[in-house]
Amino acid sequence: MPVIATRGATVSYGGRAVVRGVDLAVESGEAVAVMGANGSGKSTLVKAVVGLAPLAAGAIELFGVPQRRFRNWKRVGYVPQRTGAASGVPATAAEVVAQGRLGHRLIGLPARRGDRAAVARSLEEVGLAGHAHCSVDTLSGGQQQRVLIARALATDPELLIMDEPTVGVDAETQAALAAVVADRVDAGCAVLLVTHELGPLTDRLDRAVVLADGRVVHDGEPPRPVGEHADPRHQHAHPHANGEDTDDLWGGK
Image (cartoon, rainbow, N blue to C red; front, side):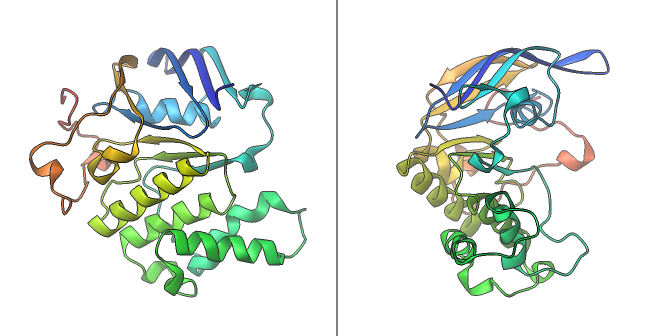
């Protein structure tokens, strides 16, 4: 039974189909990248999987349960796209990561020993054990991204979904992310991530699913980085925020 199964998934905005009839299956212990040029529908597909974008047609199942009826969200760790860990409310890295444990206890009950251990373990996993009590607004962009990844890990997920986790981060964060993916896959977790470029993730992935104009045009071996993208010091920054298209490994604009 796939952890994620989409059949004919279609998502429309304003009457325009952004994701068109996508079939996708991700198994336990499998790491899959969703790739494509800007506007190809890759982030929209992931949002549909986690229930943030409604389907216009087709179906999605999580752990064999229709997504509209799925309620056991503590089995899923989700890192959204381009979201800073700092929210204007003073919080330490440990406090942000602790949000990932809320689904493991009844509302209003204090954190238990297991919750605190999960927070510490998750920060250690992303290389931020020494920053647990640092205010997140004092951390670098790459460190904030690792805090958000740690928050998703703290749920002890069986499915980890990350939307553009390498955008604008440094080589250290890219390496930490690759290690997280490898460790989670080894533990049997399914990993689905949206990315423009693979960098150090290349050897950690089982498949790449490439979208163009909302449709799957490739489902198979991940591409090998070339040119500057093969340099481990390359920072994955793209002008998404300005709504601009960018060239990438799969056909550019």
